[in-house]
Image (tube, rainbow, N blue to C red):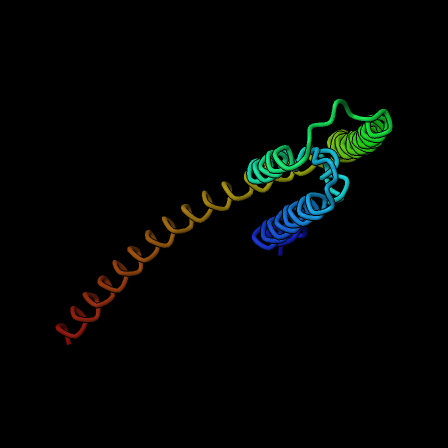
Length: 184
């Protein structure tokens, strides 16, 4: 079995996880709309506890934009976002950036470790000598096989010659016996 798991079940799990996130976005969107909260992509992402990029994804974006249009028709437009909301959105964005940078650094470090291990495995002193030793052994066994095949061919030829000699000797013996029987 594949140590990394069944690809079909992993894909199915990933699909269910994605559907769950999308459902959380739609639920959070409905709740914010019902409460009369401003409907921004970042606000919906915060309420649903998902990344902002998901709120811009096809299939989700349309719902948010439709809710924004409904909200625009039901509430008077505000003049400008409040400094508090701008600060909150900025803080959320900084936190997301910080988390993404930390994840990127963690993944880069893991990749470097893995590549280093692969390079170490290729260049270990024992692996080169072991490879040379196996190649020499392979060459020796190939020579032994060729010699055995040549010996076998020679033995087959010798057997054929001996069988012919035996047949000739039998024929000669029969003639001698017949000739001896005719004299008597």
